[in-house]
Length: 219
Ligand code: 5RP
Image (cartoon, rainbow, N blue to C red):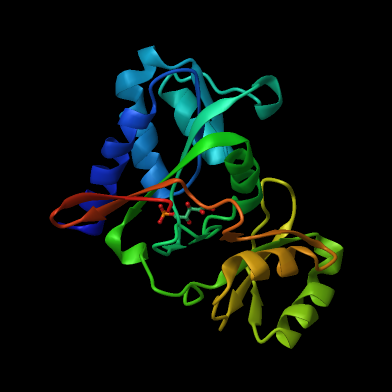
């Protein structure tokens, strides 16, 4: 099976969590496949809240109503991908730059369903460079702070987030205690958020493997 086939498999498996109401939808290539699958059952949901402008556009093209998060009181489920995930359902996210909106929607949602192909499951996170969304005037300061913490920060070139900010991709980290490090990096002035999702991990992980979809749940 190709990586795309594994992604499609988990995207389709996630449909069973989209039963009613407004669905939280993340961003990335796996989520794009989820949005395409969601179109086949759009009659049973009210619509979606999207974590990126790109996802919102794709939802609208399929005729799925897109809500502003402020107009929604509750979100039963949020479906999103990840760049790395552990068996504790901690994640690194933000490869697509949408980490801040993703973290906000994850905070609101009752259930976070992470959809990934098997290559994303790791024993310890950090091989994938950790994205930090940074206020532009704080770029150099945050870079220096991350160097002190053992990372090699690299500015994502020619890139602006949907919120008008920059991304620093931080290489060389070994994230042994993700919830603690998540809080520490978020405390650096000028960091909007970082791509560790551990204080609010996923509740369910659907992992696409050659033998089928494996479901892991938060302990
Ligand atoms: C975007 C994300 C994505 O979920 C993550 O990058 C995974 O993307 P893909 O499904 O394309 O591998 O966090 O900000």
